[in-house]
Length: 133
Image 1: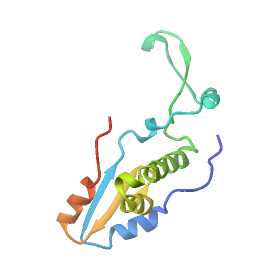
Image 2: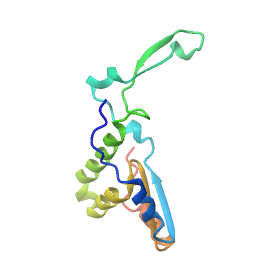
Image 3: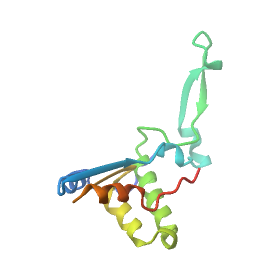
């Protein structure tokens, strides 16, 4: 799979901004890799081997991977594009602040931000967040 364009924010600039204020906060999008399915025509390129019936005494069999896997060169592009497209699509629901926040403070699926006081950092991580499971 081709890696695609580099859409990720530069980690060094995010880490430098993280040190600019007294309080730092981080967040992680849980299981980000599994949020994006692989196109059906690409599934044959992402396979893994595992024991039949999960028994090490059985022979190895081939399993297709339907979601992105860790180490896939294309994943950072897929994840960053998907997250930004989602925020853009929900722009009217969450407002332009969330779009700016995601575009500036996210490194793939990790949010890293520093703020001048702890009250603001508590609010920033919960503002506009809903459980959509």
